[in-house]
Image (cartoon, rainbow, N blue to C red):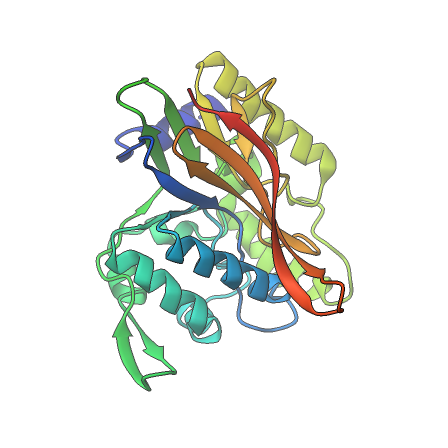
Length: 290
């Protein structure tokens, strides 16, 4: 099965969400929420992420996660991840109750595509504030792809994780998971990173992104992915775009859609003149969707 076939499959029967001048979407990818151990790459940016998430909830955005939200290659139990990052899942459950939550699976959380996964694993969680179980995402569907469509202009945005352009992490994902879980994860504690990861190997990153870009140009569509962790939004070549990730060394990147505008945004810590810390939102790039 070719890269193009795998990408086409991701959008076959994908849900189509309306895009209008009043639309507000935040598109986030590659959180890699873990179990709170030294291997949990999400920990260093959890406060940045939570601050951004609170902002998007208060401002009425619909939250779309493009995959690898949870690190299920290094960790076997989703319940442990939910327990450790209880505050994040509490806030995501508020999005869900208002029909403002859409989750796509990537290669690191591919298990979510199994039928009934949400009911078995994500139907409830233990809320530390109320000290009792609360509903989480009962009956939530995890998608491989989502399409945002403006019925008036005909503009369509195709959203998926992007691992479909990575043969080893899509077709051979079980073998890749085995190597990460039992080989690269222990070595990561000693500072040895996985060279097969598209997020860490720049040669592989370039190759994967070129395949995604070629697919978008060939099919004359707007494609938004994650996977490589490298943010991209270029007005001169807007066919292929990338949200970046939530595990950059010092920041979180994501995309926002506000009406006819698509923005690449960075959330990072900064200091005021009096030395106090705060979380700053910075627009890195933007394009018009007209």
